[in-house]
Image (cartoon, rainbow, N blue to C red; front, side, top):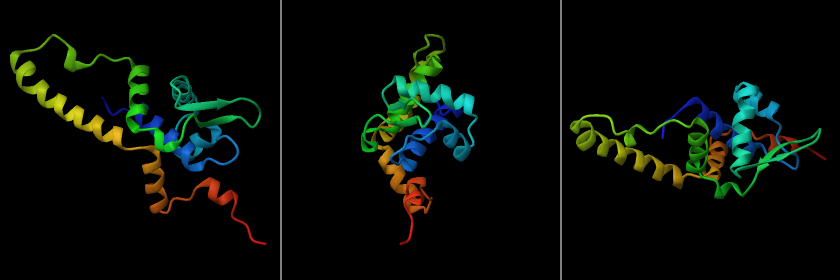
Length: 150
């Protein structure tokens, strides 16, 4: 697993959709503006997440994206796996090239670190991140749309 811009954009996009969701789907234009992600690049990431069943695309003039399942059932590891498949890079830990020092000493340590990181990402859900955003005082579009006085 590598931390890449695409992975960060994918996590931020899913979090944005979860955090700003209302009765209307979240449009990619809104996500791009809030997150500072180039829209063309964002659309590729969103389509990959739809293909993987993390997001659901809604067609039409008021279309956009919704979560395909509850935010407590989407982990950061789910998103990381989708992005890794999209990037299609080879895992250096499985590359047969290298020395005995690399294979016997370095790779096991690196694998242990990777396993720990993926375990942590598997425990962290979009729900956890939404709660953290709320505690940090970040305003949600869904909250501001319904704030009114009578």
